[in-house]
Image (cartoon, chains in turn red, brown):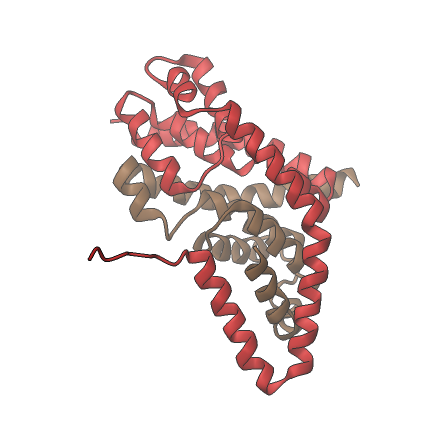
Length: 167
Length: 118
């Protein structure tokens, strides 16, 4: 008989651990735990419309932006255009490091410069789908100012990394 | 996401009394602490915004929170072995060190600019 190898996802393990902690602490202070739980529900419903917006924007950007398009513009001798593409793709492409690093590793093998890799990775800080959450918590001015600084510093980042890693 | 919210609300009553003594508004120490915590944390960026937003409400300075957000997705101590394996040791180590430093600098510049404007 074939043995089924069912893995429990990390977020589920995390969720269950937190719920376990709630259950243990409930024995010692039920009022505090009830208050924490109610606050969580309130916060969750407050965030729900923003999370929905984040989901819609994420789906839209992932639909229009594929790895092949990035590969085309960040390869050998991309010049100034390469820097611009690195910035734009860093902002638009989302994904966890374990998906992005193999993709970037491939691009590096095909000739992508370290400076462009650094620019791409630094611009991951500006995430269009998450901007509504940032504005909700920190305001529009903060979000705009920080995003501009991130884009500017991504260039410095590329220049410094390019110089350091130059053989 | 719901698990993170549960944890924030559970820890907040215990931690909020200490924030005022840890985060004093110092232009170097606050972002340094924020950047250190952000560097060892990892997860999707939206989690960092929610954690930061809630910490801000509890009294953590905007300086610390800014550095925390910045280093959360650009400095990955936990992801360093993975980054080294795909992008090279020299690149990964220097990139993380520079991003840590830039996280602090951008946090300070953002708050200074914000203070100037508002």
